[in-house]
Image 1: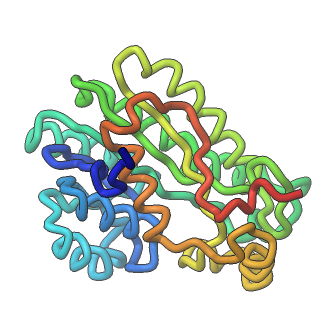
Image 2: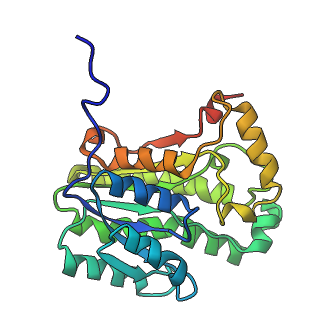
Length: 262
């Protein structure tokens, strides 16, 4: 008997989760939010600040987000306020997507050896430590287990030209994922890093010669295609579903096989 490929589909019906990192409709976080909503997930969505709100709120409303709230992880108390609102509105939480990163331009565009202590600390705080803070706040709301995913990149394990200080920062992020997975696993909370291939987002546009990076990825990947935010979203939706309950602590590549090539 041949299995029906449509017999099992990931579902997030009845599950509620937080999406951090939507900036516009080109954001990886938006692609994930759409995929999650498509399979029944209920969303809380954050926007960075008042300047970002007009770009994010219409997207969140179109996704029927039940909570829409500001979140700048560099502003004391804002992350806590988001989780307090979730706790009051929902009482529980099933999944969190952490899709934010930042490095000061001078440190991002310069050599790692020249990176300032302040710039390195700020990049680590926004891009890595905010995940740890998020997991700590999510844990008491994930009383029945749950899943957390963050966004990494190939530059965490190989030197990517012009990726600069974000390489060491993403390496720390991936290591943090493994430790969080080990510590939260007994509570049924799974943690993953998702590592997409290069995608032209607003954040990626700050990387020097990014067009060349896109061309190289398309040429070297076994599929000879660039991935899309929708591709990443479908993988994240699967990781958040009960079908992925046996998976945790992974770096999940969504790059058409690019990472496997020498």
